[in-house]
Amino acid sequence: MRIYSQNELTCILKHFNLEQQDYTFKALHIGYINDTYLVSLDGRSEYILQRINHGVFEDVDGLMGNIDNTLNHLISKEYCKVELIRTLSDKTYWSEESGYWRIMTYIKNSTTHNTTTSPEIAFEAGKIIATFHALLANIDKDQYVDTIPDFHSLDLREEQFKKALSTSSTEKQEIAKEAILFANEMLSQLKKMAPKVVPIRICHNDTKLNNILFSKETRRALCLIDLDTLMKGCFHYDFGDAIRTIVNTAPEDEKDLAKITFDKELFEAFIQGLAAKSPFLSSEELKALPYGAILMPFLHGIRALTDYLNNNTYYKVSYENQNLDRCLSLFDFTQKAMDELEYMKDLITAQIEPL
Ligand code: GN1
Ligand code: MG
Image (cartoon, rainbow, N blue to C red; front, side, top):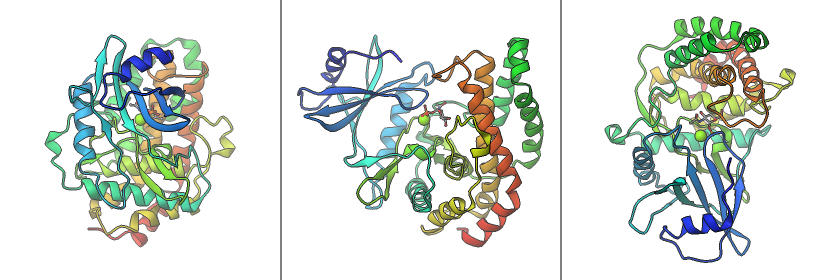
């Protein structure tokens, strides 16, 4: 990540409709895609400034339109409002040679969790995801652009994986031998398991635990952040991304696979959080949830493996083999979720009422 100077960032802020003061900027090394800065005034955090990764998100205008439209619908006393600061010419982002920039309000006294062992946090996560989906249930889907077409398509990820296999070094393939074997086996299993009819919704499409803001005071979940992948999708995508980061108490790139867990207490708390809202999922969607809990860690694992084989061209990595470590850890959780398929089915049927 190229770190922009205080001066450069101050110049960018001048294009936005906010009081021009002596802000300070701190680079936050979060996420694998965008560059994020915390903007503070007199030691108080005020805004989040981001440089959008245009290599990954080609249609920035469409992406910002999706976010703007969604924020107008995420209004409820059970959901904390995040606002986009517009530019002086009333646009939702500023673009110049250095890239595409946007600013959002910072929610005071908020925090995120990379991992958790707390059933209370798992419950809150389930509840806020349910609230988010209930608020967006009747939104006009045609207004949305696909910010990354086929983002969670298994076929696309398989194709990219096969292409990477055909061009990568034999040395890398040897190092990743077991992961490649597992990927091929799971691809054929998941194809057989895929649900036939699942309704399309507007989904967040990246509901990992650290994309949920929590209040430091009340410990309640406040809202979802990182809205770049808001677009059409199936609820089981958002379910699976939450499960892979909540029910597994270890981080996504954990090297010690013995630490990867499928923690049933956390799973149950998350399900109870979903069930705490009035029913919003159809019976087809409920049936697809266990599949989502296996699909999503696998999809992220195969994407990380593909990027490892491609010499780390997509994700930012902090060390050479990070993508391989992420893959192995995500594949390990995939297998652990697979082993709990029947348990998940029974619990979901017992706890969540369909629409
Ligand atoms: C990427 O940069 P970040 O963490 O928001 C990725 C997600 C993954 C995530 C972690 C556009 O998101 O799909 O869940 O890494 N986003 C994109 O694995 O590829
Ligand atoms: Mg993201």
